[in-house]
Length: 334
Image (cartoon, rainbow, N blue to C red; front, side, top):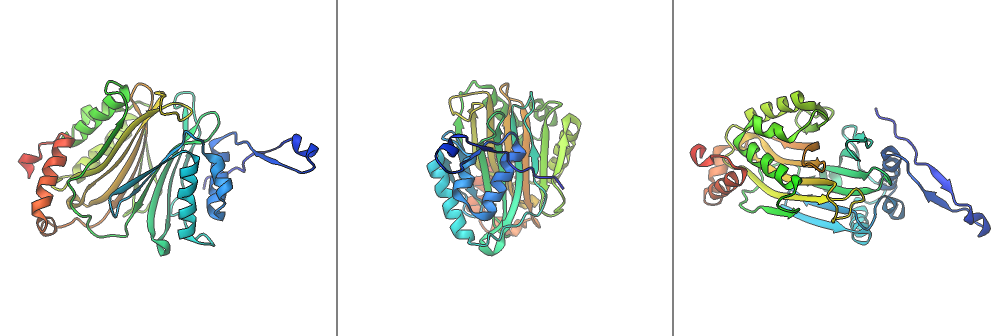
């Protein structure tokens, strides 16, 4: 069990002159910032939780049940998001954490920290939720946060829509890295997909069926093994869909004008292969290599061919369109 360190609290000398004690929040690690965030979330303290965000912070919230995505940028909108969430959860906050989160400090090569979290509050309409938090390496503020809420079960509806957003230059290394990854994934080309990783890369995978601790695949060999197993699982792919692909670059302070870091926030599915709802967050370095990849797969019994064919008029065109987007020869397989 990872220990959670208490955030360092610094006294502000001016407070004594004012006749009262003032506390300044001054985290010196991701663990410090995470301790504040976790405590604030549990106690539903809006002022405390907003200490972790800046005007450059961006939170994306994807509802996999309705295939809708909402973006909250800056402290006012993020505060409103948490205010609504806390109202829904009520007090005492009923959330539980099914597996230990991954908490990583910045390094000289990664230049960011992260927390990879799963939580749930089924009685309040949140059967399973995942968050990826990307932290500043200097201020330990949350630069980006990607959230996906998953439904409790059932086959997702066929979709032909794809919300693709590119907040990158077409020639940027991050965009080129994502384009290669997308094509290689669709073609199940192990050689090409491994061009996106380095010896320092980590791909973290949570499987809701196994319900084991988050699997951490470190380095090229382990990540290649992960994709080998995944490609074997994805044998049919006739209902492959990617309703959300958001790729962006940002600075070390979270500013959208910077290009030192990048991310792709992805939601995809292949229900006929048992992958009902899946999300990935990819975090890139400045040369477009994937340094971290957080994956949550909400798997279930495969949706049968009969279930797929019930919506044949929409599902087959959707499969063809998505297969084209993924760069795979679905026209042969379908």
